Image 1 (tube, rainbow, N blue to C red):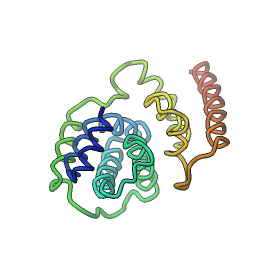
Image 2 (image 1 turned 135 degrees about the vertical axis):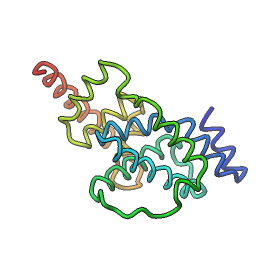
Image 3 (image 1 turned 90 degrees about the horizontal axis):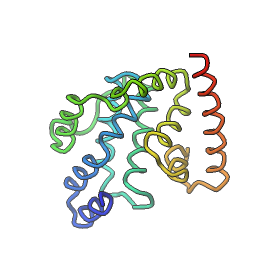
Length: 190
């Protein structure tokens, strides 16, 4: 329903309304994904802000080759990697205070408890995840937390815009299985 509402607003030329609908549908999980990756709320907020800005700017040109959810995760991943590589990057573009849909979402997220901190089990699992590299951490987040299908995960993690092959998807599944084995070993050690 959310995807259809977002597309209908885009088709009608209401990109701010479409962005608001996209953020209502996916902001919590995107922000939780970034907090889990960054392990630092400030860095996650920076990456989330940059993600929202890129989504807002890119929505009029979105080609609908994937869902908005997958597209948003890909942007979030790229922005996380960018902020990790260049923490001191200059702020650019439209100030968030001028974009009502982003400002309202940021205010709500700042006052809410992050998803990964809501239960004791998730806290323990988050500590184990800290021992993983960022790519493995993303893979876990997209598959377990966000329940994305393997083809969508392959699109999010792909280095290019090409459609992922069946071999790419199979490699991700195998990597995920190795990752689960590694986590089981870490659980035993903990």
